Length: 629
Image: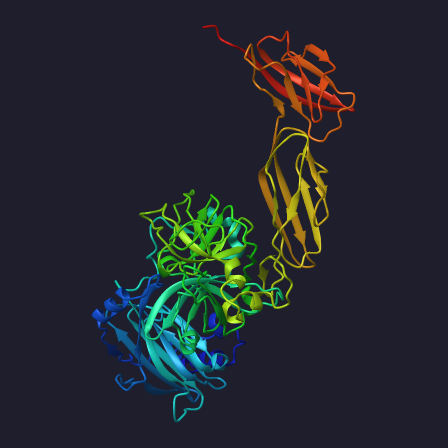
């Protein structure tokens, strides 16, 4: 019976339908999970901590957050003592292990990765609590790197149905994140706000494009942040924006070893006790960057990921604004200290500035001061470099270079290279600009919305220029929904008209004071989404002064604002709280207001009713007397 169960397990490893996961994995489990293989004796690697400290202290300024180092596995200095095992069903398994005392996490870098059909490769911790893979021929290429395995030891397992004379890959380097030297999960400052707190509820699309980067530069590793960006073809080409100082000296081979972790975040507003899962991609190529000194450029870098984003991932390619208009408020979404995803908020307009220099409208940076919010005082830290600055419209307007903000200096300024400068102001070559790549059709647009790739997901969303008006005025609602939408249904509580089925509804009139909700339902042939904004519109009673103070200087008449309502044949009635009419008059009529004198009214509470072309509106009026001295 044991042999039969093992055979079924092996069949599931090789003949199950493939499911695309992170890093083009396929469904399956390591062969060792079905067999009681002997423990693999690890190759123990000793790390020179003085060398790590020296590298960390001598990085350029501004520099990305130092994460760790790589150790060569190909120079002959380290003998990799892998073992072949023949399992049942003519399955051959090769395993090796590495251990680094004091390591926080480990990963592997390969060269000449060339697996065949039915070959599988896994990385896992000795207890298999963490497993990466299966990697297959879909990952083949001259360069390949894996995500991180937490802990100081990892096991590599390669399985095949035909034992080769030589392994179909070269183990090139071991990546090492050392405790006390490299940051990572759990290391962000205590003031930071997880992206799924209330502060991030309106930024759920944008966060799907933001990634942590484990970047490689020679044999050093660093943390940075960046974002997928949309282009005017809206074709899901995986362009990725970060800062140029993130790997400013990286080579083509280095870029091919960069690791991008998407969706690396807490599920809620709490910081998780265990590391969350992530979607990992490996490798990129350099497309364009700002290379002149930061005193005159915007420190941008545009990459193209080596792998297309599978439709099943529903990743978001963030939109952008190259107008140069001052962002009035917004957020940055980032991975401080290489930790999970956080969000920081600014409520005051950014300022055009030179990097650590004077303010100037033509300067290439946005200077931002962060704001305290309900769940913390989000700032930026090492590892946040390259993260996208979003404006009030949810569009990228900059990428982080550096600054003074921290959890102990939360009012210190941060500096973001302007997207408008990166667009075409850093040089005349295509490799100096974003423009040729993000506007390949020469549309000339100054802003572009974001894009969900390969999804039929619908997102109901809308905004308005104002949320608080006097009664009798109109509000314009703007549709911000996304997806293949075929039907819209708006509902405007307290508004005229009270509903609309247009994509962009007409102006909505609000006549009666109160606080009202707005609801939008969007539908496609097979999906729907609803957004309800409760207490979204506040209509103020437009009678003033209220309260009216008897005898106060300059208080001679009472005014009622009427917006654009025609004022022909207006009447005003004033009743006391018992319902008795105490004034009935034809008031003075101005261009957009009614005025009348309250002479003769005593201190108390009254109801003022206006009748304008048979349209009746009532207001509460309080009259008080001045106390004698």
